[in-house]
Length: 165
Image (tube, rainbow, N blue to C red; front, side, top):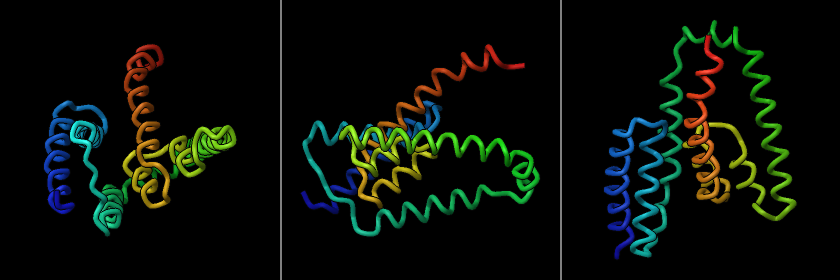
């Protein structure tokens, strides 16, 4: 099959999966179900088409627009107030991620870029784009973040029940 036609198939199936994921109303449902739809298709049909040149650029620009558009000037006082907790949390999570990535790399379980991006905190969509750009395994990075999101979703109700005021 023509690779361009293959990408149209990916886009159509991914869009259907994304719509289904959106209706499930789970965090990152559109992303996760679109991804799982394409993976299932590829496993069933045993097909693979390379991403078109410039695809990562388009994704990065779209992600940058989404993040930039979400900024509101009224956020500045809030950001100033939460600076220390944000800094402490970020340094701790990134530090633990670096430590784990070094361990996984030295044990030869993962390559360094995949280990670092997989164990790093952050938005799954942004880290997947970074994985493609850096040569890391996007599939491994997605696995780490997918299971992390699922774990948070499953544990949040328990945490909120016992620690809410």
